[in-house]
Length: 165
Image (tube, rainbow, N blue to C red; front, side, top):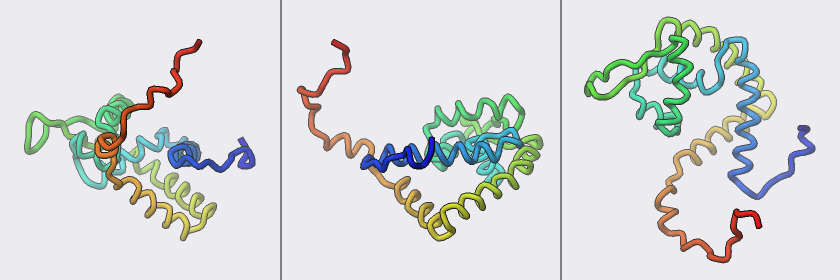
């Protein structure tokens, strides 16, 4: 799809999802020689830089549902890049720890990720890339969820049915 095919949308969610898919595809292409996808790199980066983290703590940092994180951990566990250890403070919890193989994969992917970062910033501009990260961090911290759902009125009974007639 060419950039001319994209029409500006008024829907914030659609615009974010389109941009996210576009950027993720770009980073995945650049990271491909490492064998890691963007999400896997992000997981390894957090565990490498912060040490073992519980599934809930890492999911919170990645703004990800714990079950989605668990799904994304499977290939990393299968490849031996991370292990689940017994929690240090609560033996019922499991902490994600990077293995030596995971550290090697991370070291292989790091220069590719740095190249993707530089290419992105060159394409959109350093100042705009920084402003975009600030704006997206603000969006990620925005509290809505249940508070918004609780204030919403009942569904319009005249809303079209999804059933085909």
